[in-house]
Length: 265
Ligand SMILES: C[S@@+](CC[C@H](N)C(=O)[O-])C[C@H]1O[C@@H](n2cnc3c(N)ncnc32)[C@H](O)[C@@H]1O
Image (cartoon, rainbow, N blue to C red; front, side, top):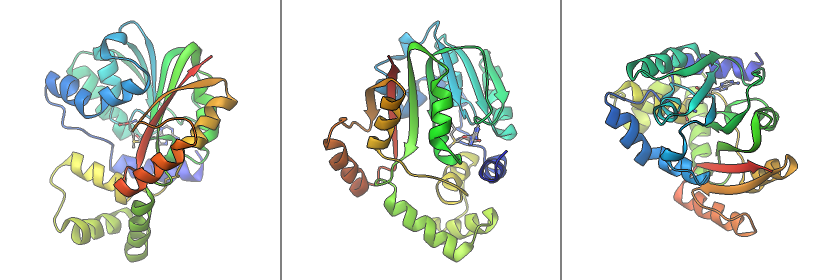
């Protein structure tokens, strides 16, 4: 494990993400769909009913909510993560709803399987690795011909304001996770975190030891170089010069995270 993966892993063992409070089938299916999955699937031009029988990879699956969602809709799901605490929660969630997901504990820089997938998802994980492009490249090779890859990344423009806040927190509280969290609770929220999910969400945002920032043009370049055509993005953006102006809008609105999908030609 490289130095960044080591620190990132230590962080997630402490704050498994996203640790959503999924108690009922309605939480897993309807709430997750309307909060995130509908938009993510939209970037691949899929609906939940297209998932049945598909081979899906969830790389950096965290606490497994999305993997469980795919499996609930009839996909064969392979999911892995570097964090044991997250995987324990992911397995519990799948068991709770009697879902079959093939989970494994692995660094994405080393992951290997003979399987090939209709859809590869890597949401919110590449930007916490030392070499996001190398990892994208490795994951892209697991797509079947005609298969898709979907990546969720922090945006260089959209996350600018947030970067300033992170820098300030580093300046005031240093690198220690506990000190950073205490500072955030005291100075930003003015209270303690109210739930495991809230702590995971807030820590991911303000306490995280490593994140990198990416642009629409950069991801289009990753797609082009490796024989993928652009399908769609959330928030929406076109692939031309307009992408720059869209990202300026994200900067104003504080849209720090974007999802892009490509199809292997
Ligand atoms: C922000 S969470 C996203 C979790 C999940 N994909 C989601 O969208 O809810 C990032 C996840 O990436 C995982 N991760 C980070 N670096 C990794 C690596 N090198 N290999 C595998 N997983 C990694 C972390 O352990 C963490 O669970």
